[in-house]
Length: 548
Image 1 (cartoon, rainbow, N blue to C red):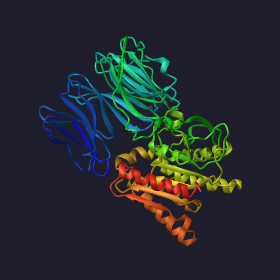
Image 2: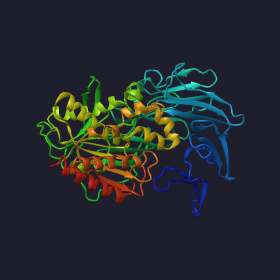
Image 3: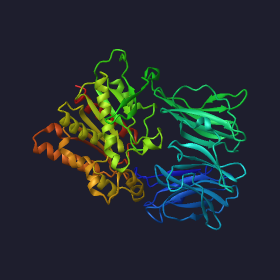
């Protein structure tokens, strides 16, 4: 069994091999200054492939570890972030992927002996596309790949390695984004999960003729695909009332479904948890923004009344709010807060064009989308100005602070009232230049495509909230992990110190931020005691500000 482990939340994952009979643990990839990731387990279980940046901090090279000999060999050492996606049974050929950004990924076949790389990316000449590998087709002369090259929507294709011809085997799925695609172990069946307005919907097909296979009835939510061997598929289902139960289904005539995991509810009646409503609102430029709205228990949506509301922004920025289970969100709902989860421009799940709308110079437009969510709440009678908070982690933290700035700018321009009365920033970015300078090197290469390059400091300053501190006029709660390798702790500290100094200069103690730093956490809070403390303190902050 392979173990992947990182110390203190620093994300420098190491790989060890554990003998399940003796429990002996043997390091396979061990360099505290490097990060490793398991990529692919060989079909015959003789070896596994992994990536690591030990030879070059900004690049991930590819390795093969053979169990019988205990020997590790490098199979590819080129610049870029590479991963092994599939291998022929004899290991002579590999399908490898090079990730350049969230919207640009290339696929190659690697001849292991010669080191020759042949690109098989599906894209238009001179353009980029996000490609992802499903794997070799039976016979290893064709490869199934997903690509968004045609119109920005990720679709399933088969590429012939000899003729380079491309076919589309499942056109019926072309109108949806994809959540996941994978073969069973024998490559006789294909499982696909589609993203349909945030909901995850499963499909299974035979590989020989791509005939649909009947599935058991599944509640609406987000279905995740797991281990698939023969006609036995492990899957999970998650929605606002169901925290990720796992099941195994035997597919085909007379198939059965067995529940594998069960919820430890600790006496909480999950059936009473509110489900969200999918809504869409217009942003400043007329763009339609999808969002999920949660209302607290007992709230009558037919008779809207103002309540304190949370605008919760997702991380990424190439992420997506889904209608899934969140104990933290249900905790806040139980205390009388409403929650809106906007999928601002730049979110995934709605096609390539929507995802790239916030890249570089489009950054602040996504911030305006975040403020427009608060306007929607007020227009609908769900909330009143000043009784709404921003809230988010990572890039969502950037949004949380930036939306406070834009809210003030908008109110000054329109001579109206600001929508927000507080802000919660969790492991967020406030200064894009210092973030890019201090984040891990391999992440900097990917993030400069999104946020803008360090060679353009004037632009980075123009979208950095720390440069517009005078526009933050409401109380803030700031939380961060001391060992965060993605968004360094300096982001939280420079914001907290600047707000503290301003509060003192203006003799306005309400602007003094609440700061919570966990010395044993990284990018987010993983330990139960820390999560409990954070949620208790952040909820108290919201009740003291917008909840009064």
